[in-house]
Image (cartoon, rainbow, N blue to C red; front, side, top):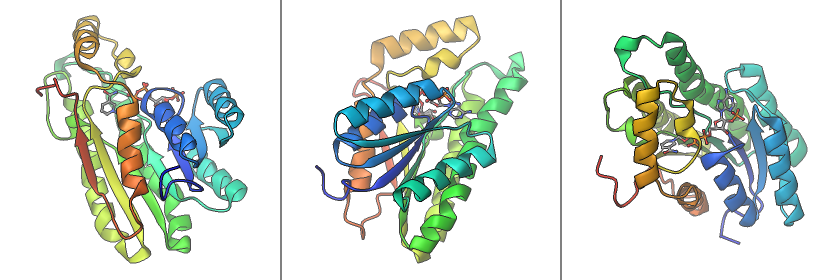
Length: 248
Ligand SMILES: NC(=O)c1ccc[n+]([C@@H]2O[C@H](COP(=O)([O-])OP(=O)(O)OC[C@H]3O[C@@H](n4cnc5c(N)ncnc54)[C@H](OP(=O)(O)O)[C@@H]3O)[C@@H](O)[C@H]2O)c1
């Protein structure tokens, strides 16, 4: 059990696959109680059963992060059931890349709703509890795309730049409440993320790129654990990691 993870109550959005699922498994293995949110409730219920069978404590709560009430409910259930919330990982996201000229406006809307507003709703749900507790840790998931913009990735990159800007402002504002903030920016990690791309040519390119370069989701889980496991007076604010072979 890692120092400063065991016994913590950790809420994770987007826990039904990819990075969120890997983080849930890893942190549960380190002794945290994990509260899992996602829309595909059967997946998070199965994961919660798996973690419980291995001696962990886990709870699944159906959550669509575009619905403010559902995000508040996810956090409130964690606090009601476990007595507190120590960490919120705002992880849910999607990446339907396309060139702007193809005007996939509905997909732009979804990216703004999930990748930006979902994170804001998470912060809004957790803040009152963390302020009252005078402790807490908010982990937001950005991306290498929060640092670099690529063709067909402009809107996604805009949402991930927004997550970084938001995280930096949050960091400065919550010091008085003893709340820590971390923004994690992964490079290519093998998950279902590229499946949200609906344009056939872009999807083919990105899937090829991921097949060649992507690293396992445990890389993200270890980065999260590193930030959380620091002593309470250490605030790891930014982590950017890539596959060793990824140039961009
Ligand atoms: N994989 C990478 O290379 C990479 C790199 C940089 C950043 N990221 C970021 O990492 C985060 C996780 O992505 P991933 O790679 O793990 O992709 P993934 O395997 O596709 O997982 C995405 C997760 O987000 C959830 N989600 C999507 N829309 C949601 C909504 N409206 N409400 C609640 N949950 C929702 C999904 O759950 P449901 O569908 O069940 O709701 C799923 O659990 C995203 O923010 C992504 O931008 C990933």
